[in-house]
Length: 333
Image (cartoon, rainbow, N blue to C red; front, side):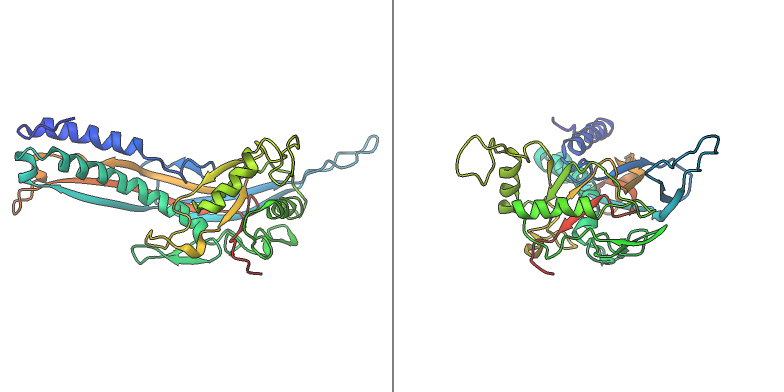
C-alpha cells in the first residue's frame, strides 16, 4: 500500500491502517498461549485490581437419617494486587520521507512501531516465567518488578504454603532435569502428589500444556514424545505412544532471554507443564495497544517530523502456583 505524501489526511488514514494490520499480524506467543487469563479493565475505574482465589472442600460429608447436612467448607485463598503501567514508543516520519517517495522506509517505521508495543507486552508476560524462580527482577527500563505469588514466594518454589492448611507443596521439579521421558513422568508425579486446594486436599485438575523455550534440542525432544506414532523409546514399531495428543506444546521464544530481551543460554532448557483451566496468571488490559490520533499539530516545528505514537497500558499478577510445574533443566538440586 502506498502512502499519500501530499495530503495529510490520506497519509494518516493509511498509516493507521498499516499500524493495525501490522499489530494484528504479530504472533503474541505468550498472550495466546492459554497460560494467561485476560481481563479488560473499564476506563475511569482506578489503576489497581485485586485478584484472589477461593476453594471449597472436595468431598461431601456423611448425612445420617434426619440429621442436618454438614455445611461446605469455603476457604479464601491468597490475593494479589495488580498495578497498571503504561508503555509507549514514538516514531517520527520526516519531511524527506513524506516527500521523496521513500515508501518502504515509511512503512517500516510505522509497522515496527506497532510491533514494539505488542512485543513489550509479550516480553513482560514471558518474563514472569523466565524469572519465576526469583521474587523480583529488574526490567529493561531499570524498574524493579515484584513477581511473587499471593503466598509471598516466587512462582517456582519448593515449599509453597496454603491459606487454610499447614501443608506445603512444591512446583519446581527436584534436581531440575532436562526434558525426557523420565523427566516428564517425574513432572506428572509432581502433579499427582503436589497439587492441593487451600484446605490441603488433593485436587484433580487437567494439565494440558507443556511449555518450553525455543531451544532446538528441547523443542525437538518434546515433539518426538507428543507426535511419534509409537513409543519414542521403543526398539520396534507398534508400541503405543502414551503422550500422543496428551499435551499442547507451547514454544515461548522469549523465555530464554535477559531482562532486556537478549538471548540467555543459561535458561535454554526451561520447560514445564501447566493447566490452562486453573491458571491464575492474570493480565489486565487498561489500554489496548493502539496508535494515538495524529493531526497536523503533531508536526515538530523544529524538524518538520510527524510523530506517530503507540501506546499500551496493562498489569500482570499471578495469584497461586498450583496450576503450573517447572524444571530449569540445569540439573540443580
